Image (spheres, rainbow, N blue to C red):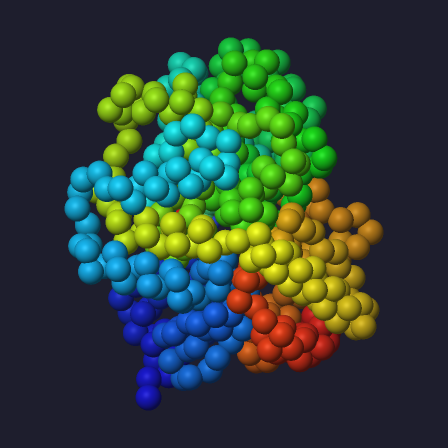
Length: 430
Ligand code: PMP
C-alpha cells in the first residue's frame, strides 16, 4: 500500500511543494499532508484508509457534504450529454436565473475561479468609471491577481506594496489598502483621491484572516460612500455566498440595498470549477461582447460544472441552511467548552455559519487584520495535529474559517467532540 508519506514525496518531486494550492500544504502546522482518495457526506478518506470528519469542505464548496446523491446524479447526466461544447447552453441560463432569484443581481457572467471573478469585477469598476484606484482592506483575500495581492504599509490611505514576488509595484500602487472596519480611513481615502477611486472591493464578511465580521452598518456605509463618489461597490462573496447564510454575508445585514457587483464562487459550483461576477445591468453590460471591458474563458460555463452548481443550489433548502446554522452553533460551543476546560484564552468570531478561533484574544476580540495577526497563532499547530490524530480534518492554518455542511450528523459531531479535549490540552501546553 502506498503511504501518505510516499504520496507526498512523489508529489513534491513533480509539483512545487507537492500542492496545487499553497493553503493545502502543512507549512504553518508542520507534518505531512495526507493524500485523500475518497469523500462522502462529512468524511474524507486518505490512501491509508484513515477516515476524517472534514471541516474544510474543499474550502467552502461542499455545502451539502461530499458526493450528495442529487449532485452526483446531475453530474453523471451532464457527463453523458457531453463534456464541453464551447457554445451557449441552457444550463448556464438556468444557474444564472437561480442566482438572480436568490440575490439582487440583474446579470451573471460565469468564469471558472474566484480569482477570475474578482479580476473581472475590478476591470469592470475601472471600465465603468474611467478611474484607476481600487480600495481593498488589509486581510481580505480576493484571489491571486496582481493588483489584489497587495499588503498595506501602516497608516491610512497607503499605496500598497506587492505581497508576492513577481508583482510589479506599478500595479499594486493602484490599490489602496485600508484597515478593515475603519470608516474614517475610507472617508480619508476618498478625500485624498477625489474622482480617482474606481471602486471598493470587500469580502462581505471577511473569512480569509480567520473570520472577522463587519461592524454593524459597515457594509452599508461602503455602499453609501461609493454611491456618493460615483464609485463601484464590489462585494466579494466567493467564500461567503450561499454559505454564511443562504444570501451570503450580504444577507447578514438583511440589506435593503445592494452593491453594484457581487463575485460568487465555491458553493455555486458544488465542487466543480465555477465562479461568477454578477450585478446591475448598467455595470455588467459593459462586458464584451456588449461593452468595451474584455473578459473570456474557454471553459467558462462548462456544462458539467453548471449541472453541479444547479443541483447544489436547488438542494440547498431552507432546512439545509437551518441544519448548517445549528451544527455551526453546536460546534462553536463544543470548541469553546473544550478550550475553557483547559484555560485556553481565545475568542470565536462568526459570520452566519462561518466561524474561526483566535487564540489569546479573549479580552479584545478581533476586528481587523492587525488583531488577527497579534493572536497566539503558535497554539494552533498542536491543536490541529491533535484533532487530526482524533480523526478530524481542520484547515492547516488558524487564519481560515471552519466549514460545516448539511451532512454533519450526530456521528460526525460525536467524533469531533471526542477529539476536542486532547486538542485543547495540546493548545494549552503550546
Ligand atoms: N475571493 C475570496 C473571498 C476567496 O475566499 C477566494 C478563495 N478562497 C477567492 C476570491 C479566490 O477564489 P479562487 O481560489 O477560486 O481563485
